[in-house]
Length: 258
Image (cartoon, rainbow, N blue to C red; front, side):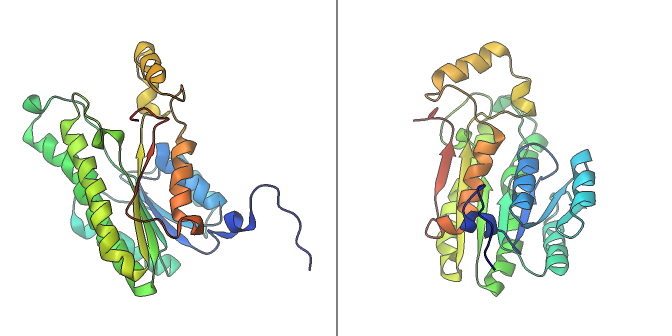
């Protein structure tokens, strides 16, 4: 039988996700939502979690009953990551991709930040991704391979006032990426990070117009990224086209940090 021509992408691009299973943390809104939508469109089975369901989660469960799985999860406790991954494996039978997207931001000078706030930032942005990665990597090792993409931040590579604790956590995530790539390469698991700059989101929507204009002037490409720009990098690193790429941090900031 002759296949119909496909003008929306190459055959490799269209079939890269067929039958594969992705876990995306924090997939109910923002960048996580875009990632979930893009992966589902590419034929992936997608599992995600968040503290509470959003309208998008409800709609996705109705539209993709056989390929979308969501749970209410708070990664404050290590055991919750293991339980979630066990449930995903029970539902889909395998695990090919982890995207550590979930995180929180708090802008405050270090000397005024309460200890509990410091602990919360480190836990959400570093400890929780590590624990989720450990659980997923065990499954990937048993099945013979996979890909892990950590969502970092340009705060990890350039200093900004008021985000020192957040920056420390994201820099730790980049270091974790490089070291883990060496640990898992022999098992066929690639580990990379995507380092976004400012991109259109609920947070930047509240940014004063003057601040946004200043960032755009300092960015060689003259604009903030779209969430799809960041998602493109994640999908590339998740695809066979990046099969020889590991231990790397891909900066997506339009040249702001160059």
